[in-house]
Length: 132
Ligand SMILES: [Zn+2]
Image (cartoon, rainbow, N blue to C red):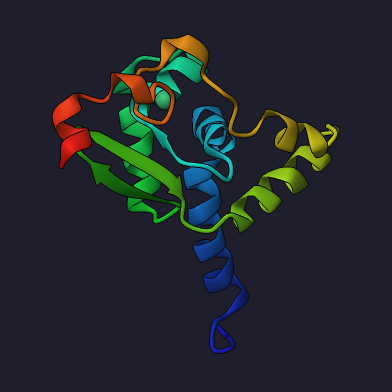
């Protein structure tokens, strides 16, 4: 509980989090990850953006502890640290006059054949990794 804070102090802290997630590209990343887990190549395939552009936003979201990452071989997987952030995105969608269900409907889509990560294409995992 943050009962010893003034309203301006409280507001400043809330605004910091909202500013981190508010750029459209970052909201897109949160929706694309949804309740799942995604590597950069996966997000590249889903959103159609370059890896360098995505990495810059992923870094900001991770630094703000909105995302957490996990390394597995040459892939780094990102997931939402707290899925409650999706509820905030749904509320914001409602305020924007959108159907909040559209957030869930679009969340965590399949990237199709453009992604070669082990989640999408397990057959492409090198055999030495399967043996270990
Ligand atoms: Zn993938």
